[in-house]
Length: 320
Image (tube, rainbow, N blue to C red; front, side, top):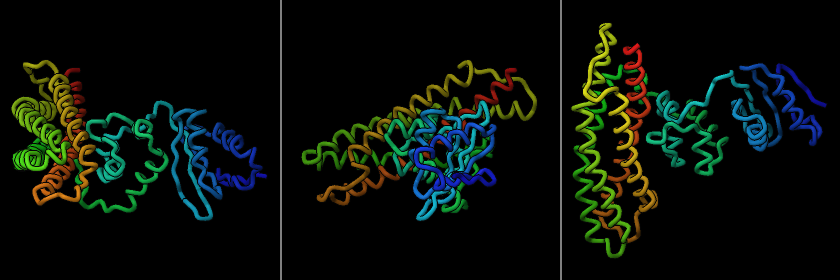
């Protein structure tokens, strides 16, 4: 026999063969936006995948309690037309959640257009675990240093990117190039992966220096013109490259190239794990690589997931 109170279903009181059919029946009766909370004596994770397989992506799944005696999950029916947020949108709203993506090697900057489900499926990850950890970040990680990038005007954000991230790249990339070359020459015979790492660093160096110059000379000044036109009620500013989508598409392609090189470096270094015979220069190279990757992830995230979409939106508004 089942017990239902305020749309709470105690699954432990249902015959085993009737549990999932009963839950499905209750879920089907929900109106859009309504929720069903199930109580169980074990993790109902298999239900998540069965519900996803048989009903599709029309629900959200939130753990309210996880043992040891009770597992409580709130299942909510989505409103029609409501889609999963992308990785980029999630990180744009709360950058603390990017720590979860980084932990599992999920690319939220260059790969920011995927949803959590799509990213987990591609990497063979447990989507319920990832979503649970994303929910927990709001409670467990202080928000003091989470700058409100998504609330900033994009002309201000463009200046921030140049002054913070472009400055970081110009300061640290020459040192990274120096150590990659040095360590490759000294240790490459015993660690051939260092030769490929050095090649990747050279490609990153060549790509980023040209890339940042194009942003500072072409794209970002036009972004500022778009904001100024919107604020003053003026017409859409003219440009020699057509719409802003042109340079943005190029910037995103270049981000992708740099991202692939960094991903290759992570594989070659086994996530920056030093070998037993590593010297000080070897250690310095790996530290610089890891720090550079962390900064570049935020750098590309701010452009791909916040600045670029908003620039396209403003241009579209001015054109209509």
